[in-house]
Image (cartoon, rainbow, N blue to C red):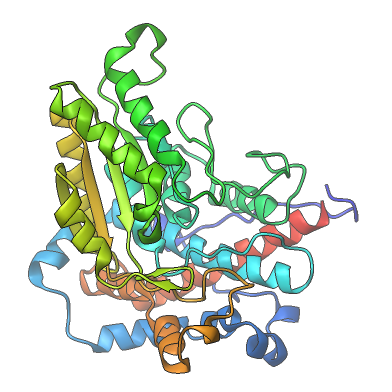
Length: 389
């Protein structure tokens, strides 16, 4: 119950993505679906065009047969990824609306990287993880895997963005990614400080059984963006992991780097791939970060390798768009031309993945659109409740 006497009653999401019956709704509350807001916030305008992007992807050549087979192999996993990805997009949209209206205080956006929810399926909920602040999709998928309702996940994330004292992660101190403190380690807007700690956890899993907090076959997972590979703490983490492996000791840590070609305003270009080739002695698994089949395969292969060999590895995800800038305060026009900004906004990996699921026979177009609308409405309701606290 909030300060205005409002009470949040979680919607019963009977989503076709989870096997139930969906109810068609609007992705945004009626009072916010205004032309004025759409002209001021590109996220709002984009939300209204989701169906057209799905249709465009359906009209394009179908994915390769092997990719469709990957999706059809485990329909429930694909549905979970899509739920988490859609939720991530709508959380971002609502965070920008809340900030525009003076009640949101964290606007770094994950749009373009939503399909990293796939990585959560390659991990186990009991694997310790520290996530880059843009990798919200991975966190949402981990929470859903643990049995959390989507309504609860959305409300808790909304509380973080609005700095509510009821935020279960930091209590309103800072919007951070986190969940179960035994398995999910806080990462705020740091660049790479999560790296060395993740290596320490990997060493502890193998060599400190008396202080064991995780299963004996757990792996330590840590992620960052492409700009962070130049940070001394990430370089130290990689070096430490390779040193432990060089000494023939187990160090089961999986590094993940998502490459969208931008480190805020600095264009990283092809440097990340070159860095991985020139610098890393560990195994590197690569995938197009906008391809759901590739993500599912590569993340599973990487996690299985680390879990089985007890050696470090890196998962490198490329070709990712940054759809709406780094944060609400980011003035992209200072370093990108209008065409580049618009092209990034129109590249929607979630719409492409949903279309691929339709082409694989997992869902119908109407089921996809209904689920997206209902998740959008649930995200709006969660932010309304959090803003009232």
